[in-house]
Image (cartoon, rainbow, N blue to C red):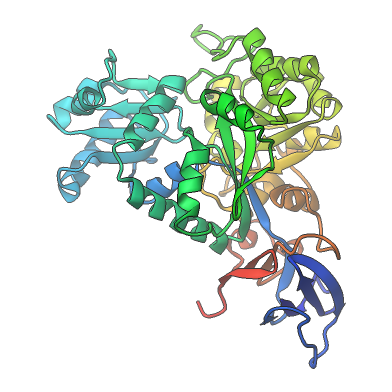
Length: 482
């Protein structure tokens, strides 16, 4: 593909970018008579060309399904949420009532299965929290899933297992079509690659989907502990291709809970003496699991949100002597910041979480020695920082993530923890998997933006139109006619 008439920097000259064999082959001054060495000609019309975006953490099946669920993110109590469901009930026939997005950390009341039963007698209902760590089920649906639970509010690992049980009720063919269509939507947002952390037998799931169509983005799928033995028996390594556009990703381990459930594991107790969070694996078991994966060539990716969980996860990386990733790293002790780079651990973070969690973090984590959402501290220490969305926890919107990391506010409020804001060039690279610029020899995974991010402010960067997305020298989204 020949991409004509684009700029690589604000105010820079117009250039043509020739891609060959999926890589950038030439960057030359724009010439009207240029002809492609390979593929089509795409006239950028003066758009800015930058490395495409990479969503380093997404739950693709959950996000695809969430696009059709009832949005309850505005609910400010359990009673308020149930009122929203009651108003939507008739539109959903007899199917399972699925809703998404509640945050109950600061609610005045508690979710409970009987609250759903009283408002919607006999109705099968499932409501997933914003952070995917809580699943609230009605008595009728608990019975159908053969789950015996005193409150119907499943947290952390119980939540993951409940979501997995719900997925088994979904028509497989329809679910696959919806998930593949969701990859088209990722391409519309300038994304060319994603790491899927769905809790499932992901090799089977993505092998099946690959027989329908190639996804519009390159997918690396995580392997959870339940399926690790199978991957090791196959001799599979992180990065090994499984099908066209699909490869094995990292081992995913849930080490602690989340901020909103007060189960993120911290050094200090939560306000009100409610404990200091939970470890979902013992430190010894974590080391054993990581060592087993790393010895087989599978990179560990450890979910750690609270500061104690991050300390212990870094201890495990040091003990195993392997690099890898910590997912989220939302609260980190100052002494642990430098340990990311020292142990070759990537900080896989989600800047949109910092904005959506700011009130809860101020309520539950204020006055502590640890640093909340320490993006600049990690970068300055030499750590490799990459961005993701954790969709559907946050939407897979890389431009919003960049803006959140740079300006630390997504509304009219003053910046939150502005001393941890990243420079724009650093945020752009983090949103692109570490690629800072369009270079000859690099992969031809590119995005054309109507204006260069360096010339835009907070609000305008979020809204800048995506002109086109190019993966491996092939256009996966063309927005010129929209």
